[in-house]
Image (cartoon, rainbow, N blue to C red; front, side, top):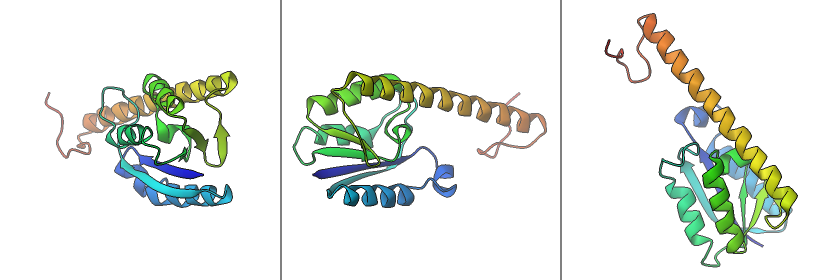
Length: 161
């Protein structure tokens, strides 16, 4: 089995807090080896997976390449590394299914032809989307609180007003 690995982080903070690209890639390479597969391509980098409005060049390239026959399966560390946007995820998984590409979350196969699997993946995407919204709200609240106390946020400047 020829496998493409998708490793993604949203922020530099994730890279520094342990959920790094290196950690994901190492674990996924171990999983591919345990399935007697071969890693044929690695899609890796920093991009947001939360909003369908933002560009996802790494995922988009993987989806484009899925039609070329270069790989038989993709493997991700967890569903949140694939996408946190339920709409983008459903569309992307439909492309993989149409192109005959299998989806592995670590070494667990998720059969995209199975209704129950699609339900589970959909639920995971909704949970990931909810979690991302909570994180975004906390971030905004923290920035507001820091500004109230006179401390600049990561941009280094206090907001106007």
